Image (cartoon, rainbow, N blue to C red; front, side):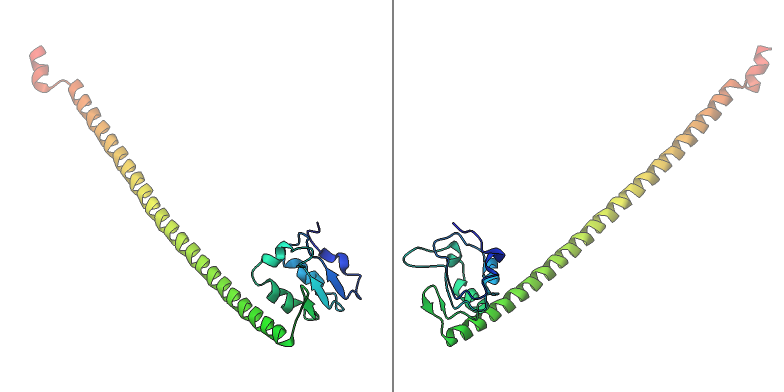
Length: 172
């Protein structure tokens, strides 16, 4: 029922053989912890008599282990030849290069999308700002019109209150 290796085995520098079959180890990170065991020659995460770990089902499991644990002579009860080690190294480096390029492409694409979104946002905000300025200008124009209209009404009201000379003469 072991789920992770962690640094627990670091003090076992003379450990040569380790069978972790039929446990629950599922992460490549645990492989890196075993790389510090320089005397480790035989490692098993899978054993026909006991069973597998979930890590055995991961894509490139054997390549990853063989690449990182160069000191191993056997993995899962099978001998690792020098050719298999060279092949694992070549495959790992190609995949690493591929995924690094893929990450750079994703980062570049994400940056381009963010830049485009910011440009669109600024464009929309500029349009919004233009609309607000237009509305404020129209509001000001309307206030000026209302003021002129009020002044005109006041003038008309003031003229209506003053007696006209023709009318004034009739009353007298």
